Image (cartoon, rainbow, N blue to C red):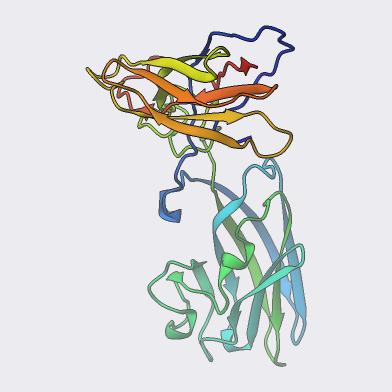
Length: 303
């Protein structure tokens, strides 16, 4: 059904006076940068030996997040002691996804010290020198993990690809940022500021727009839909406003017709009404100070 959710009752009368209270609009999504995000850090101090010409694997089992917390951003920090880091290949895996963080960079330099792989870093890992302290973009983007539920087992693999040297994976950590942290209804208003915490709104305080109050009925003697608009948002705001009449149907509700209110807020639509349920939709009026969360309500006209 379009525009409003309906409550269809078994009505036998030909004339029904009803009220259409609220139409909740679909919020327009801002760009990705506007996501309300918060970080979840986790780490592992492992001190695992990296064998010569071999690999070591370390895992972190992340818990506490759900499918409602899709991943938006991920940073990975590593600390590795090794006398020839140009031997090393480091990857991060989760589920069926694997990202190459660094591939034999740094030549004969020593160590990775507080090296953070961050897609937003100014420098690529290829531009760094050992011990690579600071932020670097990885060989492959970490956005391969975007939109996944981050709860699960994450695996860091360090491979020494050349003989003669060994090292130690001292520690590694991840910082998760999820899309909807602290935003239960996903309207880009933090829960602590949201006055309608469980309703997706479009106003700065997290509430939906308030609709005009619409009273409508069908007059069978003249085959006409008629009614009037009320509006408290601003003077004269009910004048000359568009009104649409729909018929309730099994699929998409067909539009019966359109009309406009007059200078007093009354509207009329001359139309034959066949047996069934109908409803009217009036335009929305933005009110800056909505005092409470508003729900979708509608009343049907029985013909």
